[in-house]
Amino acid sequence: MKPTELQALEQLIRPAVEGQGYEYVDLSWSRGAGKGGAVLRITIDRPIGQGHVSHSDCVRVSREVSALLDVHDAVPGRYQLEISSPGVDRPLKRGVDFLRFIGQRAKVRMRPDATKSSLGSVAAPPPDSKVGPRRMFSGVIEAVDGELVHMQADGVGKVALHTAEMEKANLLFAFNA
Figure 1: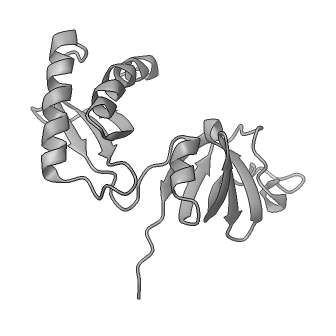
Figure 2 (figure 1 turned 180 degrees about the vertical axis):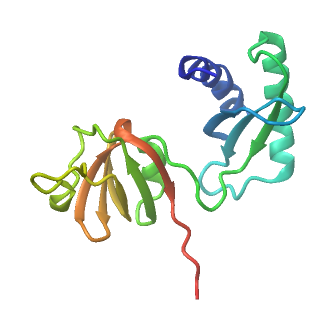
């Protein structure tokens, strides 16, 4: 599925998820190798302070979204619809996602062409290097200013990462010893 088609699906699905009182987190599409065809995976969460997503929450959202997709004939061919919780390595997409988790650890992979972000002093490639700028950052989310995420990154120090330049970002689960 093309990025524009995924954006159109998100615009269709997000209001249905949020209208039921859940937070829309993510949508992904993957081609399946088996008879089931492709998989449309929608990740949802509960608002802050309302606990974790349960199986019955996923069933409730699945029924609503499935009916919506059928009415709009939004997904061509055979596919499986999966509704899931974000899990311990919750994806982070927008500034508000990061804002929710200030003080927690996250891992971010930046696009190679990032120019709106301040990647720290060790992010610049050495002269005459065939290696590009540093793209992977792990550290504590300190603040969020719109779509600019300020982190204390391991081995780098303070960085300011723009969400539009992130390829992937997620929380890092801390195991208590």
